Image (cartoon, rainbow, N blue to C red; front, side, top):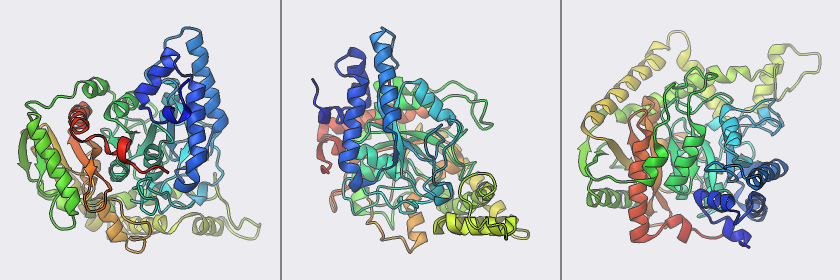
Length: 500
């Protein structure tokens, strides 16, 4: 019999293999992870809701299939932590906000349906910055999440709950969403793997909208192969999503199993370095570049001058779209309703509800977006930002004519202390400096661990960027780096992360 603590240390691929062979049951695996959540999540606060009964019911279904001799899928019975931005029928979806506290969706998001179809065991919903607006998971209406490497530090944002669940062994797989880096940035600071697929590759139907032209769901895991297996399970065309790409899913699992960069042209983005970048982060990044060179890749310096304007463009486009999307939270249709005592108008009830239900960061972005879209300012702000977006896409297009992938640090620094940037929005926004251009252009990007910063012993992330619909290149490069890193130095998360 496998000890329950051993079951929580397995990769998703290893877990699925044990369940398929009968060495462990899906129920045993689910119970081990539920016990781990019970033991450590009071400290970490990765989960907002644990669906114990639902998880065990799905695990029993997997065991019944195996006992009947049915062929199990590559992730059957594997536990997963789901970011609380995807609707789940019969299970609360709050988006980290008081305005949806207690809301029980009547339907599943397409991504949720695909997880269930793959027999993945959804453990529960993870904590996040309210409406995915933030870089630290400090903007959750339900309190911050801690980084398992150091509970006084942030686990990244907005999907800090998902990344913390992985790093604390509460789940081997997780789902995040990435609007400006909210999958990759948490992955970087927790020593895990996070992928932003090509925009439109994973359905957004049932994913609560923040910025519709930027939002993208994607896989989070502890290894590149696990991320690829999850990517394959959730990706693909969805007629319910008008922005969904009607094209085959790139061969991501094959690429993850056969990582080879010999002859690959790798571009180092010149603009992602210099002032504001932590010395230890740059040291580990430069080592990763040399590692790629040793593995047979050709290293090319690439300049993308418009990237310097990406942060400013993003913080006009994203708030503008947010101010439009969040207009639906009007106290009339669903969620919180305040002041409806029969004496107030609908407008007054809406105003009181939004005042009580939205947090400070959400209000800030709604006001910024409303201003940017207002008459007389639209062309000067939102229109100009969209022009910069075009320039950024052209920079990517030019770069990918010369190289196959681009690399950079994922974040300029390691995880910062909780509260350190809470009163300085601009310092907070800079955490997404390297990740935002890929969202503006819609291409694919990954973060994977590349060691620990020597000055603080905290994880550093390597970002890999590929052209749209060339997501398999991420996994090819990521698998090569991961294998070489393991062979040379061991895995920082699986071997060195502090126990809770």
